[in-house]
Every structure is written in structure tokens, then in C-alpha cells.
Image (tube, rainbow, N blue to C red; front, side, top):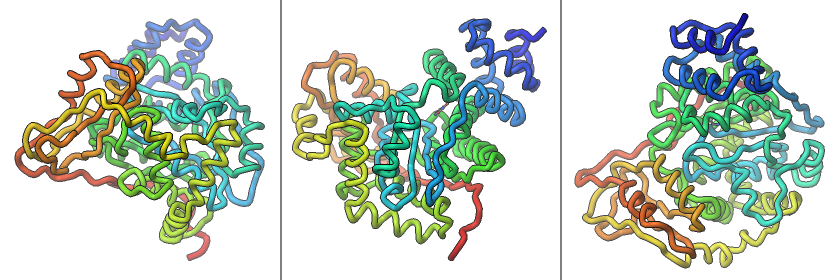
Length: 432
Ligand code: URA
């Protein structure tokens, strides 16, 4: 007789649970036969002791089989999709999706909500008043017919096991685990109808995987499973020691993405172009250098911005936020500034704390935090390292926590690279 406790004990002893045991555990949790406490014990054991690659592959398959697997109507090019393992100030989907679609590659993505300290694309999209994310796949395909791109909430029938576990992991602080992240991401990507995938694997103090080697291992495992299952996949290991963009907090992050679509330069734009280029290269079977040119051109010509506007309208959303004057109203009122006490170099940003501060401040009605400096940047005395915007006052606790979220050094600090490595499992280009 398989028991949840027995499976958890195996993990604690460093043994590999069998597929039957994992299936009984996950199925039992979904049916109510395995309690929240028993499942939490298992998740804690996996966080502490890990899982073998085979058990991770089995867990992924068990999760995949908990729900539907989608197929989309074939088009000229295969469908593309992107997924991030979770970062701060990361609104790349709002840039990558329209770039790819405006180059003729269909993009249909199911996104998630906030997890831990990181933001979720669905929460951001819902800031376009009226926009519907709860579309059926048929409705989403109609949006793709019309515009080439749709981003919708994960349907309840798609990997329900991940839906349930994702929520429990968020509530029990059991997100940071290579096998749990791999099985969560890959089960969703296998269930979704896209054939060409780019994974943004974040690494650093603000990521769920802090060390580059761990992130490379996660990237290799995820791309291996995806390729073995018939998908083409590239995983970009990108830095998360500093917020990716310049703003943390829903509406300001949306504004940052729209600024990039309107021409703003910086890390958010650079990473979005890297991710979009890999998708275009795989979907069209063209060399990466050609894909990079196409992606740049889509952005620089304004085609990508127009494409996002079309998608927002087709999903029922208002496009008022595309107007810079409307966006500016969210930055009119400063609730608090954290200023540099002396000249110095930015040596540390507590991205996890910053994410939670933004989340808590938003709950009190604030809009978010301007955080333009990255690790290694020189900061002049009195310059605002963080600026909190909002129209309603926030508690002192928010301000105190914000004061502690950055550290300066008198001596120069080396910056981190934006992209460390790319792991690919794909067919070679069809033409060069
Ligand atoms: N993103 C996911 O989809 N799952 C995780 O576990 C972490 C990030």
C-alpha cells in the first residue's frame, strides 16, 4: 500500500520514489486523499534533499497527465511560447510576444499569476481595463487568427496538479527547488500546444535558483525533457541579481514594457530581443543572426508596439496605457525616496525583499517602485536609489524595509552579465 508518508520518507533518505508512488501522491492530493500537511512535508523533503533526474521526469509526466494536452490549428510556422522561472521587474512577455507575432510566428501563451516575490504576466495584463485573460483555447485561437498573438490565463484543465502545487508552494515557501521548478515548468509547456519554446532561467539572489551552475543544470534538464518530447527549446540563463527593468510593481512594469516598445533602451529590451530571436530562429529554421535582425527591426519600426495594441484590443482591453501622458500620472506622487548617503557603487539589492515590498505597497494602493540602478552602477550622493510612487499613503514599515533593500560600496563593484549562457535543444537551421 503506497502512503504519502512512505514516499516522503524515501525522498528524505535520498532514494528515488517510483512513478506509481509519485502518481498516488499527486493524484491523492488532487482528490483530497492526501492532506495539505502531507503534501507540504513532501515538498519540504524535495526542497531539502532533491530528487533524481528520473524521479523529476516521472513527476513531470504525472503532472502532465493530470489534465488536458492542447493542440493548436497548424499554421505556416509552429507556435512559439516563452516561460520565465520568475524574476523581478520582468515584463519581457509583453515585448517578446508582439515581436515574434509581428514577424509572422504565431504566439499563444498561457501565463501565471504572482509567485513568491515575483510578478505574474496575467496580473499585468489585467491592468489593461476590460482585458479578458480567462479565454478558452478556441477563443484564444480566434485572437491568434486576428492578430497572431494571444496571452491567456492557464486554463483550469491544463495541468491542474501544477495549479494546486504552485499555490501550495507559494504559501509554504517551497518554491526554491530544481526538481519542483523543472516539473512545474515542463509539464505546463508539454501540455500547451506550442512547439517552439524559450525558457528564461533566472539566476542570482533574486531568482529561485541562486547559483549559475544550478541554473544551467535546471536549463539542461528542462530542455532535454522538452526535446525528448518533440519540442524545440532554448533556455537563456539570465541575471537576477538586480531587477531586470527599471520598475517593480504591476502598472509601472507594464509602463516599462510599453516604453521599450516605444524605443527605450536598456536591459529589459536587450533580454527581450535575445528571447525573441531564439524563438524566431527555431520557429523559422533560420540562423540566429538573421533572427536577431528581424527582431530588432520589428521593435525599431514600431510593428511590435502596434501588434501588442492589437492583441490587447482583441482580448477586450482598453489601450489607454499606451498613452505616455496617462502612464505619467502613476509617477506624479512620490511616497518615499531612498537616497544614497554618500557616493558609492551599488553592491547589493535585496530583490526578494523588493518584490515583497512592492507587493505589500500595491495592496495599500501604491503603484510601485522606480529602481533604475543595477549592481556595479555608480550612485552619486543624494541620488534616489529607490522611489516609491502612489496616491495613497503607505505604512512606515514599507518605507523602513525599502531603506534596507540596497547596499553601497565605496570601492568599484563588477557588474553581472545580463546573459550567462544559452542551452539549446533544437533542429539545425534549414537555411544559412
Ligand atoms: N515558474 C513556474 O511555472 N513554476 C515554478 O515552479 C517556478 C517558476
